[in-house]
Image 1 (cartoon, rainbow, N blue to C red):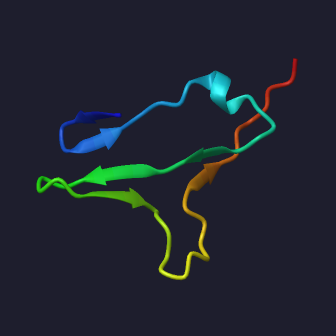
Image 2: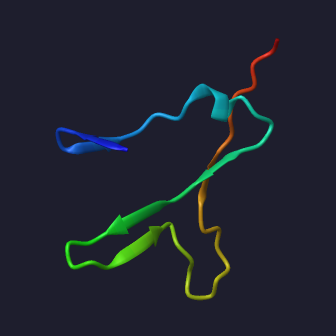
Length: 61
């Protein structure tokens, strides 16, 4: 992940998206005080999905 100006961005290599499986990801946010949080993280009842997913596009060969 890289910062450009006031925005953060990243690129996912094509080999990771050429798959029948979804790509799962989450973020670790660190504060200046040293605390760290996972986003989206778990809800208090632990009943949510603790990551995001992106379905890749499979190319035909």
